Length: 157
Image (cartoon, rainbow, N blue to C red; front, top):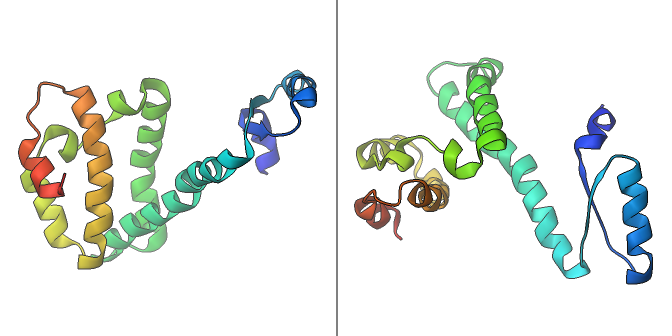
């Protein structure tokens, strides 16, 4: 059914410069978003798509797994998480990444972050800290006057 939202999709094309303008105009005339791409950039473009598609599924699987640890069924866990997922996606789209950011990293709440790390399986700690470092860079943009020094140290900045 994804064909129904094809007009929202972005297309990238590559090819000989001689034909690019014409090809771009064809896609645009069909109402599509289009961007030329160089061959060497295709892997990075695909990585971005996989990150928000497949890897995002992995994050949701991990989060629902935490809820399943204390009794949720998978379907219940996804239903419980969905409003938060949807709210965040909508905020990112309307406000941008930096302004949509909330949570313990943005607040600089080191105690909560330590509690998270202490409650997760050891093999999850690296992913959590890596993603928290990414969030921390956004938090610093959002709150340039906030001291994130202890959080930097804990996350290994």
